[in-house]
Image (cartoon, rainbow, N blue to C red; front, side):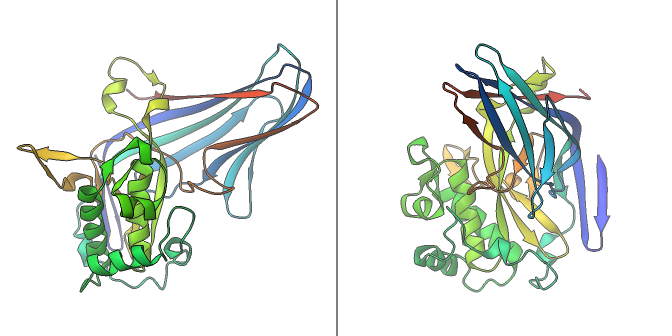
Length: 311
C-alpha cells in the first residue's frame, strides 16, 4: 500500500500492479494500395489511480504525435499488397491501483478560480447536454440548498445509481435520454452523472477504457479485454484533484436495491484501465481512422491485450 499527500489531500493506493496494454493493428487489402492510419491514443492521463509509464509504437514508419490539445495520436502509412498484411503495434505500460481517500473530501472549498480547465469541464458536449432545461431542472432539484461540490457529487451518484436501469437497447444515447428514460449502459450512467454536475458548476468528465475483474489474471498473465469495455466518471474538487466515481454498479441487500457507496470516490482494486477522457467527436479517444487510394477491400483489424507484469 502506498500513501500520498499533497497540500490538502491524502489518499492510499491499493492493489498496485504494472500492466502492458498492447493494441495490434493488421492492415489487409484485396488490391494493392497506400493506406494512411491515425489512431487517437488520447491525452496523458492525470487520474491518480493510473500512472502512464511509457508509450511505444512499432511497425514501418509508425510514430506518436501530439496535437494542439495534447491528444496523442499514432500515425502510420503503408503500401499494402493483396494477400499480405501489414502490422503495427501500440504498447502502453501503466501502473494501476485501487484508491482510497483517507481525508474527509467534504472539507473541500467550492473555489475553482485556480483550476485552469474549469470552463472545459463545466460546458456541454455531445451526449452531455448540461444546458438542457430538463438536466438543469433536475440538477436544481437534486442540489437544492447544497453548495459543497463534494455533496453535489454524492447526491448525483445516489440519484444515477438508483434511478438508472442497465439496458443495452438504450445504449450510448446520452445524458438527456438517460434522464428521460432511466435506461442506458455504462456510458449513459457516466454522462448523466457528468451532465448533472456540469449543470451546477462542478467540473466532471467521462472516462473510457476497461473494467477488468482481477480474477481474470488468476490463471494467466495476459487477457483479451474486448468484453470488458467500460465508461465511468470523475469529478474535480479544489485541492484534491480528480476523484473517481463508478455509478454503473447495482447492489442488492435482502433483495432490495440499495446504494453501494464503496464505488463513490473509491476503487478497491486495479481493474479500471483508462483509455481516454474524450468519448465523442473527432478526438474521440481509442478510435481508429484510415484512408486509402485506388484500393478495394481494405480492412484494419484491431486486437487488444492486457498483460500483468508483476503477478
